Length: 345
Image 1: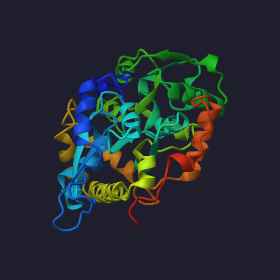
Image 2: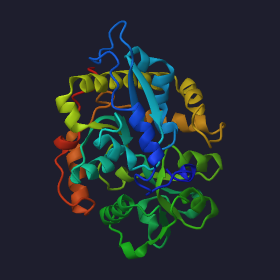
Image 3: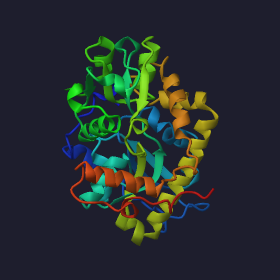
């Protein structure tokens, strides 16, 4: 995502002592009843979930589960907390300062290559959102149309690798495309016509904004242009704690079970889900937000069942990341992702 996320300090890292202090107080699975049980009469377990970004349509299942009372019914007192920086979830979950986090498959694999203590336990958005995008007036209708054009990215390392792979897969010479780093201004670059296309905008957010302005965008998800399949957003937990702490195992299972219920409600009733996310998603046009939710809902459907990861696809993506020098050493998918805590069925 781009323009609507400008309030966050991308790249700031763990610089906010205020955040760290606050999360230590509220995190770490406070099992008030001693054994973490959610059975009748037990006090709820304080559970902090650090988001990947400010509340937005990608998080609609989380807030639906919270507002519908599904977390409470599972014995969890869940706090959904925005981060100071998108890299915070992997770092704070790894150190045990936060119970659970929302991150990205590429970030999770990078964390694994760095030896951070995290594992993906469920796919929140089980498909790629990052896309090549262009307005109708640009004349870009396919990847091949990028030849001789200006393409903007946000300058992220993964986007650089996406760019390289997409051009190679489609037989284009990198020198035929003028690449420009516009930071978080991808949407503005397209609207103004300063570039012909972008790589990095989300198909359920910026594409909806462009369509609403009558700009009839072409939207090509990167995974339809040559990049291996991956899960855009994932729920991460502390790997070592999952292996050794039965109460934490229960907490993760209970959280995912409640989230699955929230996800099902979103799929069945997008209109009500849009009203729920509108309460917390600041900076969005209330007229357009329901359209963004409508665009998000089909992308939440997981044919293998809520939250399910394809470990073979994860391995392929990790191998691709290694080949593109996005990670310093190979990563074994089984070390960074698991389906063991997802609800059955």
